[in-house]
Image 1 (spheres, rainbow, N blue to C red):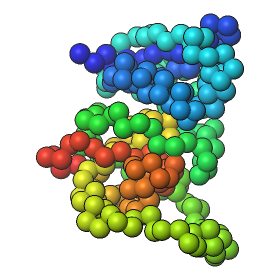
Image 2: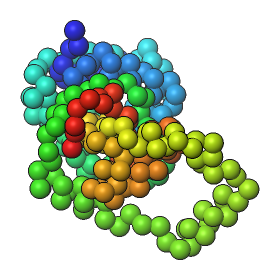
Image 3: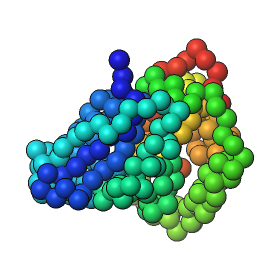
Image 4: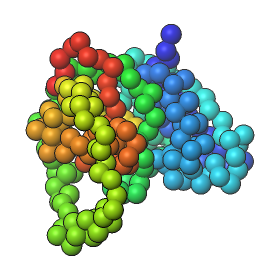
Length: 232
């Protein structure tokens, strides 16, 4: 049975260096951390640098507290406030404050959250929608940037070459939205629904899922395994 709660990653040589996280399946989340560290793709640059210098043996993983999934956010915030963890990018749970949004920050996390039904069907509040909308403002590509991208693509095969029919099939599948810290946000019925609601181009979401780009619209995306239920 999956263990839901708050966990800690702590350095043995530098015990003041801590990472605080939460998950509805702590064992799965730890495996994700290990996979990202070994691939040199962890979203916490401080933790990745520490791993490179001291190795995996220096990192101690432990469960701080188990709790109900509905209490995850407030429990994680309590422990973040208590520890002021060195390795965490953001000190406010569910917020991107303090995180630098760029195309070079983080590649898509491993698709290990398939089947996650946390908050499935819950609609975002108007306040949350406004925050997401504000975060996406200003994300545009200048004509000069478009020209440079066009020059770089000359002679290269289109990203969707040979995928006729495949893209359409993927567009019809439900997708899950995550922050760049791997925090689950919500589910959508399809990539087109994301594009219509958030203005994020569906092809970029598909490329993010396939690992061909690091993020789409400032978020990470996964194909949800839930296909028989209508989501947001």
